[in-house]
Image 1 (tube, rainbow over the protein chains, first blue to last red):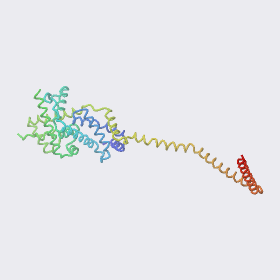
Image 2 (image 1 turned 135 degrees about the vertical axis):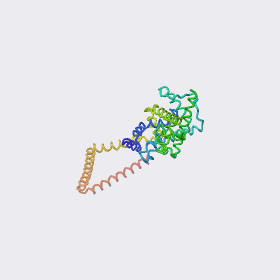
Image 3 (image 1 turned 90 degrees about the vertical axis):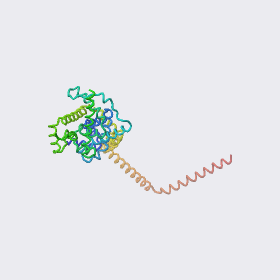
Image 4 (image 1 turned 180 degrees about the horizontal axis):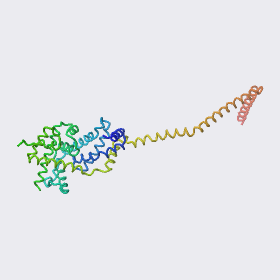
Length: 181
Length: 168
Protein backbone atom coordinates (compact mmCIF):
# COMPACT_ATOMS: atom_id res chain seq x y z
CA UNK A 1 0.00 0.00 0.00
CA UNK A 2 1.39 3.35 -0.95
CA UNK A 3 2.19 6.14 1.42
CA UNK A 4 -0.42 8.41 -0.18
CA UNK A 5 -3.19 5.98 0.73
CA UNK A 6 -2.19 5.68 4.40
CA UNK A 7 -2.02 9.46 4.54
CA UNK A 8 -5.51 9.79 3.02
CA UNK A 9 -6.92 7.27 5.49
CA UNK A 10 -5.30 9.08 8.40
CA UNK A 11 -6.65 12.47 7.27
CA UNK A 12 -10.12 11.04 6.57
CA UNK A 13 -10.14 9.50 10.05
CA UNK A 14 -9.42 12.97 11.40
CA UNK A 15 -12.58 14.22 9.67
CA UNK A 16 -11.10 15.59 6.44
CA UNK A 17 -13.83 15.48 3.81
CA UNK A 18 -11.34 16.27 1.09
CA UNK A 19 -9.25 13.23 1.95
CA UNK A 20 -12.30 11.00 2.16
CA UNK A 21 -13.55 12.28 -1.18
CA UNK A 22 -10.18 11.34 -2.66
CA UNK A 23 -10.57 7.85 -1.20
CA UNK A 24 -14.02 7.58 -2.78
CA UNK A 25 -12.62 8.58 -6.18
CA UNK A 26 -9.89 5.99 -5.83
CA UNK A 27 -12.14 3.07 -4.91
CA UNK A 28 -15.53 3.92 -6.34
CA UNK A 29 -14.89 1.72 -9.39
CA UNK A 30 -14.17 -1.33 -7.29
CA UNK A 31 -17.08 -0.74 -4.91
CA UNK A 32 -19.55 0.13 -7.66
CA UNK A 33 -18.62 -2.92 -9.75
CA UNK A 34 -19.18 -5.15 -6.76
CA UNK A 35 -22.54 -3.55 -5.99
CA UNK A 36 -23.59 -3.71 -9.64
CA UNK A 37 -22.64 -7.37 -9.98
CA UNK A 38 -24.66 -8.15 -6.86
CA UNK A 39 -27.70 -5.95 -7.44
CA UNK A 40 -27.85 -6.14 -11.25
CA UNK A 41 -29.37 -2.69 -11.33
CA UNK A 42 -27.43 0.51 -11.88
CA UNK A 43 -29.58 2.72 -9.64
CA UNK A 44 -29.57 0.28 -6.76
CA UNK A 45 -25.87 -0.34 -7.19
CA UNK A 46 -25.17 3.40 -6.90
CA UNK A 47 -27.31 3.57 -3.76
CA UNK A 48 -25.56 0.65 -2.10
CA UNK A 49 -22.12 1.86 -3.12
CA UNK A 50 -22.86 5.32 -1.70
CA UNK A 51 -24.17 3.81 1.53
CA UNK A 52 -21.04 1.69 1.77
CA UNK A 53 -18.82 4.77 1.59
CA UNK A 54 -20.96 6.69 4.08
CA UNK A 55 -20.75 3.74 6.46
CA UNK A 56 -17.02 3.54 5.91
CA UNK A 57 -16.65 7.24 6.75
CA UNK A 58 -18.32 6.79 10.12
CA UNK A 59 -16.55 3.51 10.87
CA UNK A 60 -13.03 4.53 9.90
CA UNK A 61 -12.05 4.80 13.56
CA UNK A 62 -12.82 1.08 13.91
CA UNK A 63 -10.33 0.14 11.21
CA UNK A 64 -7.31 -1.12 13.17
CA UNK A 65 -5.07 -1.87 10.25
CA UNK A 66 -4.87 0.64 7.39
CA UNK A 67 -3.32 -2.04 5.19
CA UNK A 68 -6.63 -3.90 5.31
CA UNK A 69 -8.63 -0.88 4.11
CA UNK A 70 -9.59 -2.31 0.71
CA UNK A 71 -10.80 -5.68 2.00
CA UNK A 72 -12.55 -3.88 4.89
CA UNK A 73 -14.37 -1.67 2.38
CA UNK A 74 -15.24 -4.73 0.30
CA UNK A 75 -16.68 -6.40 3.39
CA UNK A 76 -18.89 -3.37 4.00
CA UNK A 77 -20.29 -3.28 0.47
CA UNK A 78 -20.65 -7.07 0.46
CA UNK A 79 -22.67 -7.02 3.68
CA UNK A 80 -24.86 -4.15 2.47
CA UNK A 81 -25.63 -5.98 -0.77
CA UNK A 82 -26.37 -9.16 1.16
CA UNK A 83 -28.77 -7.38 3.53
CA UNK A 84 -30.55 -5.56 0.73
CA UNK A 85 -30.94 -8.64 -1.44
CA UNK A 86 -32.19 -10.70 1.49
CA UNK A 87 -34.76 -8.01 2.23
CA UNK A 88 -35.83 -8.00 -1.40
CA UNK A 89 -36.12 -11.77 -1.42
CA UNK A 90 -38.47 -11.60 1.52
CA UNK A 91 -40.77 -9.15 -0.21
CA UNK A 92 -40.81 -10.85 -3.60
CA UNK A 93 -39.21 -13.70 -5.52
CA UNK A 94 -36.41 -12.94 -7.87
CA UNK A 95 -37.75 -12.44 -11.36
CA UNK A 96 -36.58 -14.75 -14.09
CA UNK A 97 -36.91 -12.09 -16.76
CA UNK A 98 -37.07 -14.02 -20.03
CA UNK A 99 -33.86 -15.87 -19.48
CA UNK A 100 -35.16 -18.70 -21.68
CA UNK A 101 -35.43 -16.41 -24.68
CA UNK A 102 -31.83 -15.36 -24.63
CA UNK A 103 -29.15 -17.28 -26.40
CA UNK A 104 -25.48 -17.92 -26.02
CA UNK A 105 -22.95 -18.46 -28.71
CA UNK A 106 -19.40 -19.37 -27.91
CA UNK A 107 -17.44 -16.97 -29.99
CA UNK A 108 -15.52 -13.80 -29.29
CA UNK A 109 -16.75 -11.40 -31.97
CA UNK A 110 -17.92 -8.01 -30.54
CA UNK A 111 -21.59 -8.76 -31.16
CA UNK A 112 -21.35 -12.16 -29.48
CA UNK A 113 -19.45 -10.66 -26.60
CA UNK A 114 -22.32 -8.25 -26.01
CA UNK A 115 -24.79 -11.09 -26.22
CA UNK A 116 -22.79 -13.18 -23.77
CA UNK A 117 -22.65 -10.23 -21.40
CA UNK A 118 -26.42 -9.96 -21.38
CA UNK A 119 -26.89 -13.66 -20.83
CA UNK A 120 -24.37 -13.81 -18.02
CA UNK A 121 -26.05 -10.83 -16.40
CA UNK A 122 -29.38 -12.61 -16.55
CA UNK A 123 -27.93 -15.91 -15.39
CA UNK A 124 -26.32 -14.21 -12.37
CA UNK A 125 -29.82 -13.47 -11.12
CA UNK A 126 -30.37 -17.21 -10.77
CA UNK A 127 -27.70 -17.47 -8.11
CA UNK A 128 -28.48 -17.26 -4.43
CA UNK A 129 -27.06 -14.24 -2.58
CA UNK A 130 -24.45 -16.46 -0.91
CA UNK A 131 -23.25 -17.98 -4.18
CA UNK A 132 -23.26 -14.65 -5.96
CA UNK A 133 -21.23 -12.98 -3.18
CA UNK A 134 -18.49 -15.58 -3.39
CA UNK A 135 -18.37 -15.52 -7.19
CA UNK A 136 -18.32 -11.72 -7.42
CA UNK A 137 -15.46 -11.52 -4.92
CA UNK A 138 -13.53 -14.03 -7.02
CA UNK A 139 -14.31 -13.09 -10.62
CA UNK A 140 -15.09 -9.37 -10.33
CA UNK A 141 -12.78 -8.38 -7.48
CA UNK A 142 -10.11 -11.01 -8.00
CA UNK A 143 -9.71 -12.05 -4.36
CA UNK A 144 -8.13 -15.37 -3.47
CA UNK A 145 -10.22 -18.05 -1.77
CA UNK A 146 -8.48 -17.32 1.51
CA UNK A 147 -9.27 -13.60 1.28
CA UNK A 148 -12.89 -14.37 0.39
CA UNK A 149 -13.05 -16.64 3.41
CA UNK A 150 -11.94 -13.75 5.62
CA UNK A 151 -14.22 -11.17 3.99
CA UNK A 152 -17.33 -13.36 4.18
CA UNK A 153 -16.27 -14.95 7.45
CA UNK A 154 -16.86 -18.49 6.19
CA UNK A 155 -14.54 -21.54 6.02
CA UNK A 156 -12.22 -21.96 3.03
CA UNK A 157 -13.97 -25.16 2.01
CA UNK A 158 -17.30 -23.31 1.88
CA UNK A 159 -15.78 -20.67 -0.40
CA UNK A 160 -14.53 -23.36 -2.77
CA UNK A 161 -17.86 -25.13 -2.72
CA UNK A 162 -19.91 -21.96 -3.27
CA UNK A 163 -17.83 -20.82 -6.24
CA UNK A 164 -17.96 -24.30 -7.74
CA UNK A 165 -21.75 -24.47 -7.31
CA UNK A 166 -22.24 -20.93 -8.65
CA UNK A 167 -20.27 -21.71 -11.79
CA UNK A 168 -22.16 -24.96 -12.18
CA UNK A 169 -25.48 -23.09 -12.10
CA UNK A 170 -24.23 -20.48 -14.56
CA UNK A 171 -22.94 -23.21 -16.89
CA UNK A 172 -26.32 -24.88 -16.80
CA UNK A 173 -28.14 -21.61 -17.50
CA UNK A 174 -25.82 -20.74 -20.36
CA UNK A 175 -26.25 -24.21 -21.85
CA UNK A 176 -30.01 -23.73 -21.74
CA UNK A 177 -29.41 -20.58 -23.75
CA UNK A 178 -27.64 -22.71 -26.35
CA UNK A 179 -30.61 -25.04 -26.61
CA UNK A 180 -32.89 -22.13 -27.61
CA UNK A 181 -30.47 -20.86 -30.22
CA UNK B 1 -9.69 -43.84 -17.93
CA UNK B 2 -9.21 -41.77 -14.75
CA UNK B 3 -12.16 -40.69 -12.67
CA UNK B 4 -13.69 -37.38 -13.89
CA UNK B 5 -12.63 -34.28 -11.99
CA UNK B 6 -15.76 -32.06 -12.24
CA UNK B 7 -15.63 -30.96 -8.60
CA UNK B 8 -12.04 -29.75 -8.89
CA UNK B 9 -12.31 -27.89 -12.19
CA UNK B 10 -13.63 -24.63 -10.79
CA UNK B 11 -10.76 -24.36 -8.29
CA UNK B 12 -8.38 -25.43 -11.09
CA UNK B 13 -9.57 -22.44 -13.16
CA UNK B 14 -8.77 -20.21 -10.18
CA UNK B 15 -5.43 -21.92 -9.50
CA UNK B 16 -6.59 -22.69 -5.97
CA UNK B 17 -5.83 -26.41 -5.83
CA UNK B 18 -3.17 -28.12 -3.77
CA UNK B 19 -0.16 -29.36 -5.76
CA UNK B 20 -1.41 -32.94 -5.62
CA UNK B 21 -4.88 -31.99 -6.87
CA UNK B 22 -3.42 -29.75 -9.54
CA UNK B 23 -1.30 -32.56 -10.99
CA UNK B 24 -4.27 -34.90 -10.86
CA UNK B 25 -6.51 -32.51 -12.83
CA UNK B 26 -3.77 -31.57 -15.28
CA UNK B 27 -3.04 -35.21 -16.11
CA UNK B 28 -6.74 -35.98 -16.43
CA UNK B 29 -7.42 -33.09 -18.79
CA UNK B 30 -4.75 -34.39 -21.17
CA UNK B 31 -6.75 -37.55 -21.76
CA UNK B 32 -10.40 -36.50 -21.15
CA UNK B 33 -12.16 -34.36 -23.74
CA UNK B 34 -15.36 -34.18 -21.65
CA UNK B 35 -13.63 -32.58 -18.65
CA UNK B 36 -11.55 -30.39 -20.99
CA UNK B 37 -14.80 -29.12 -22.50
CA UNK B 38 -16.19 -28.29 -19.04
CA UNK B 39 -12.90 -26.62 -18.12
CA UNK B 40 -13.13 -24.36 -21.20
CA UNK B 41 -16.74 -23.53 -20.39
CA UNK B 42 -15.82 -22.55 -16.85
CA UNK B 43 -12.95 -20.46 -18.16
CA UNK B 44 -15.33 -18.75 -20.54
CA UNK B 45 -17.79 -18.01 -17.74
CA UNK B 46 -15.02 -16.54 -15.61
CA UNK B 47 -13.75 -14.37 -18.45
CA UNK B 48 -17.30 -13.34 -19.32
CA UNK B 49 -18.01 -12.18 -15.76
CA UNK B 50 -14.71 -10.31 -15.50
CA UNK B 51 -15.30 -8.66 -18.86
CA UNK B 52 -18.94 -7.84 -18.15
CA UNK B 53 -18.40 -6.10 -14.83
CA UNK B 54 -14.97 -4.79 -15.70
CA UNK B 55 -16.39 -2.82 -18.60
CA UNK B 56 -19.34 -1.13 -16.92
CA UNK B 57 -19.41 2.63 -16.78
CA UNK B 58 -18.30 3.99 -13.41
CA UNK B 59 -20.35 6.87 -11.93
CA UNK B 60 -18.87 10.34 -12.41
CA UNK B 61 -18.06 13.07 -9.88
CA UNK B 62 -21.73 13.32 -8.86
CA UNK B 63 -21.17 10.07 -7.03
CA UNK B 64 -18.59 11.64 -4.72
CA UNK B 65 -20.78 14.72 -4.26
CA UNK B 66 -23.80 12.60 -3.32
CA UNK B 67 -21.75 10.73 -0.70
CA UNK B 68 -20.39 13.92 0.84
CA UNK B 69 -23.94 15.36 0.90
CA UNK B 70 -25.20 12.24 2.70
CA UNK B 71 -22.41 12.51 5.24
CA UNK B 72 -23.26 16.15 5.95
CA UNK B 73 -26.96 15.33 6.13
CA UNK B 74 -26.39 12.64 8.75
CA UNK B 75 -24.06 14.69 10.89
CA UNK B 76 -23.51 18.34 9.95
CA UNK B 77 -21.04 18.69 12.81
CA UNK B 78 -18.77 16.24 11.04
CA UNK B 79 -18.39 18.78 8.29
CA UNK B 80 -15.13 20.62 8.35
CA UNK B 81 -17.00 23.64 6.95
CA UNK B 82 -19.35 23.50 9.91
CA UNK B 83 -16.38 23.66 12.22
CA UNK B 84 -15.17 26.71 10.35
CA UNK B 85 -18.59 28.34 10.54
CA UNK B 86 -18.56 27.97 14.32
CA UNK B 87 -14.87 28.51 14.88
CA UNK B 88 -14.26 31.34 12.45
CA UNK B 89 -16.23 34.11 14.22
CA UNK B 90 -14.55 33.25 17.53
CA UNK B 91 -11.16 33.27 15.90
CA UNK B 92 -12.00 36.54 14.16
CA UNK B 93 -12.94 38.19 17.46
CA UNK B 94 -9.73 37.08 19.13
CA UNK B 95 -7.70 38.38 16.22
CA UNK B 96 -9.53 41.75 16.23
CA UNK B 97 -8.92 42.20 19.97
CA UNK B 98 -5.28 41.25 19.59
CA UNK B 99 -4.81 43.65 16.67
CA UNK B 100 -6.61 46.46 18.52
CA UNK B 101 -4.43 46.06 21.59
CA UNK B 102 -1.34 46.00 19.44
CA UNK B 103 -2.29 48.87 17.08
CA UNK B 104 -3.76 51.22 19.69
CA UNK B 105 -1.38 50.48 22.54
CA UNK B 106 0.13 54.01 22.27
CA UNK B 107 -3.29 55.66 22.38
CA UNK B 108 -4.29 53.56 25.34
CA UNK B 109 -1.08 54.54 27.17
CA UNK B 110 -1.66 58.27 26.46
CA UNK B 111 -5.24 58.05 27.74
CA UNK B 112 -4.17 56.44 31.00
CA UNK B 113 -1.42 59.06 31.50
CA UNK B 114 -3.78 62.02 30.91
CA UNK B 115 -6.34 60.58 33.33
CA UNK B 116 -3.76 60.11 36.08
CA UNK B 117 -2.44 63.67 35.59
CA UNK B 118 -5.97 65.10 35.84
CA UNK B 119 -6.50 63.27 39.12
CA UNK B 120 -3.21 64.64 40.45
CA UNK B 121 -4.27 68.22 39.53
CA UNK B 122 -7.64 67.78 41.27
CA UNK B 123 -5.94 66.56 44.45
CA UNK B 124 -3.49 69.49 44.38
CA UNK B 125 -6.34 72.01 43.93
CA UNK B 126 -8.23 70.62 46.91
CA UNK B 127 -5.08 70.91 49.03
CA UNK B 128 -4.63 74.50 47.89
CA UNK B 129 -8.21 75.47 48.80
CA UNK B 130 -7.81 73.97 52.26
CA UNK B 131 -4.53 75.87 52.76
CA UNK B 132 -6.07 79.18 51.61
CA UNK B 133 -9.06 78.77 53.91
CA UNK B 134 -6.89 77.85 56.90
CA UNK B 135 -4.67 80.91 56.36
CA UNK B 136 -7.64 83.37 56.75
CA UNK B 137 -7.89 84.59 60.47
CA UNK B 138 -11.22 84.30 62.40
CA UNK B 139 -12.69 82.41 59.49
CA UNK B 140 -14.63 80.06 61.75
CA UNK B 141 -15.99 82.88 63.90
CA UNK B 142 -17.04 84.95 60.89
CA UNK B 143 -18.66 81.84 59.37
CA UNK B 144 -20.54 81.08 62.62
CA UNK B 145 -21.82 84.66 63.08
CA UNK B 146 -22.88 84.85 59.42
CA UNK B 147 -24.76 81.53 59.77
CA UNK B 148 -26.56 82.74 62.93
CA UNK B 149 -27.56 86.00 61.22
CA UNK B 150 -28.88 84.14 58.18
CA UNK B 151 -30.83 81.63 60.33
CA UNK B 152 -32.24 84.54 62.46
CA UNK B 153 -33.33 86.47 59.40
CA UNK B 154 -34.99 83.36 57.97
CA UNK B 155 -36.95 82.71 61.19
CA UNK B 156 -38.07 86.36 61.35
CA UNK B 157 -39.17 86.26 57.70
CA UNK B 158 -41.23 83.10 58.23
CA UNK B 159 -42.95 84.50 61.35
CA UNK B 160 -43.70 87.78 59.51
CA UNK B 161 -45.25 85.90 56.62
CA UNK B 162 -47.40 83.71 58.92
CA UNK B 163 -48.65 86.78 60.85
CA UNK B 164 -49.61 88.63 57.62
CA UNK B 165 -51.60 85.62 56.44
CA UNK B 166 -53.58 85.36 59.73
CA UNK B 167 -54.45 89.14 59.63
CA UNK B 168 -55.95 88.78 56.18
